[in-house]
Structures are given as structure tokens and as C-alpha cells.
Length: 102
Length: 102
DNA sequence: ACGAACGGTAAGCATAGACTTACGAATACG
DNA sequence: CGTATTCGTAAGTCTATGCTTACCGTTCGT
Image (tube, rainbow over all chains, first blue to last red):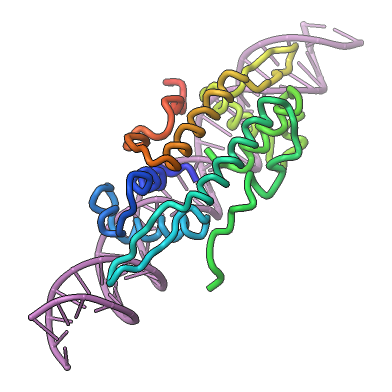
């Protein structure tokens, strides 16, 4: 979604890959909060995880980012050109799953 | 924001301009809810208002839509190419005012 | 001029979700 | 082995905000 913290995380990871603790240091929120955001972003296919010792390095997934970018582009371009049959119920994207089933 | 009802309104208005009541008929929410969304969208510069008798016809504002589309495009493209200095505090866009001052 | 249609606003409620503290699991290190 | 580091998860709180009902103003029709 359009949460500021979420966007900040994206921006930080755009700069370079980071561990969870590193992200938490640069952001005004606690480390668990960052962890939760990363979980969502991972489920959305926007970031990938890499384990290095006790640390988890997170990295943007170019494919996922490009996919989301294209879906947004499609939606807003259709809004401009006048087409429809989009966003009637499921939302903008198919890339919307939220949680792994517990 | 990324609210489903908000997107549905955008999609409806992309098809053709509509009055408030018309939108409320096609959506699963009440008329005042639509009215509130339209207020936000108007403040965001995404729709324009036209009075026709007792009815208010709403229409997408191509300029505003294009502006938002470009800002999103910029943000996500930077995420892909690796740049930063975006979304550090104010959010993605300057086009973020929420309410007219009371 | 009176009633009806249309729509914006206020007030209140309820749910989503973002955050924090507390705890447990996994790995590195002496 | 025992301790420290790093991180994920659970539980609970709190705020933002999307929706509804109720009310009022404005415009049109007869």
C-alpha cells in the first residue's frame, strides 16, 4: 500500500541491500515493525531474502517491482484513455496475496 | 490512497462522467460515502466538478491523473535503477493535500 | 410557492493496520 | 558449552479512515 514507512523501506533497498537492523536504524520505527513490513513486501514479491549468518539481507526484486510498476501504469493509463473493466472488485493487481496460510 | 472503492470510482469515471447518485448505484456503498471520496479526489486534483441543475457531474481530470501517474512512474523506476533521495519524509508526491482548511 | 430530487456535511461507529513490548529460535564466537 | 547477536512472531494498543444515518441547503417542476 501507500504507507510512508513502506515506501521508505523500498527507497532504502533501492539504494543498496540491507539487513533488518540496518533498516531499523535509518527509520523512525522499531525493528519488529520493519520485520513486519518486510514480510508483507516479500509476500508481494517486491523483495527477496538472503541469509548471511544470523543476519537476513533484504534486496529489491526487480521482477516484482517492474510487475507492480506496469500494473499501476496500466491502471492509470486506462483511466486516461477511457477504457474500463479494471479494478471492479479484486483490486488493481493479481499480486495482492497478503499472508502465507498459518 | 489504494482504497478499492476509490479505485472503482476512478474506473467508473474513466468510462464516462457521472453524477454522484449514478456512482452510488454502481458501487456497494452509500451515496454520502461516494461524496466523501469525491471530495478527496477533488482535493487531490484527480477529478473536476460540473454543476448541472441539482446534479453534480464528476469527471476525471487528465492533468491530475497524468501527474500522479508520472510520480508513481518516477518512484518505481528509481527503485529499479537504484537511485534514492525520494520518499524520505513527505511521501511520494507533492500532490498530497488532504482537506481544505475549515 | 410548495414539494421532490439531488447532494454536501456532521456525528458516530467500527474495522484495518501500523506500532510497541515481550519472548523464543537460530547462528556465531569465546 | 554458554553467551551474545540478529531476527521473526505473538499479543495488545491506538490511530486513521471508510461507512452509515441524520440533517440541511439548493435547484427544478407543477
